[in-house]
Length: 225
Image (tube, rainbow, N blue to C red; front, side):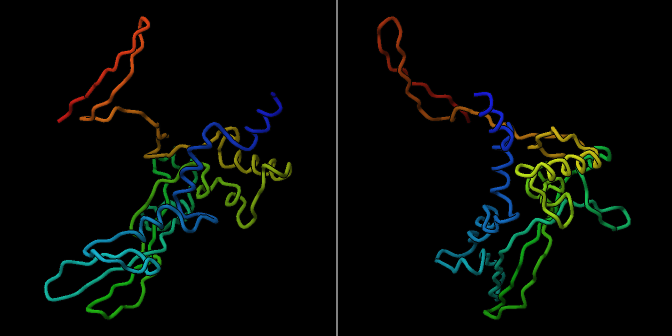
């Protein structure tokens, strides 16, 4: 039994559900039609009918005497970077963000096309619309085996040589190879998402209470303005 447990945790960590959920959401690696992309393509503003999803999300602007429509798709996440005061950029690492009290994040880009009075304008590709925090050890993290060695992808779970190389590279970047990740770095502080369970307000819940060989139905409601 111990060998089975060790084999399981060799490939999956205690925070694997956090990383797997994040990787499923972001457009990274082979997850091109990600949840983020589906959300963008399903945007419908100012229209009640059906539109072609292949052209992306649909936003109709409320402009007098003009018919302006914005289509958007292909949301992408760049590599985590740091923009210096002089405007230069360089790839960031979690340790650098911790020491400099920065946020470990990546630029978010989307492809746009504006249709004015039925005439489409040239497509604008890779327009940055903001930045998004990156989960440490996720597929978009610079510490991931697919990125940490540059153009070469490492396979630490199947190759002992790649595993040793990955650990050495992590140490060079000031990281602990035993750190499972699964958290964010916001302004230099490590932040983790915690799942909580809360009762739904203003809803009647019925519970069965068995006590002293009697069965009693109890109705409860938690009132909230």
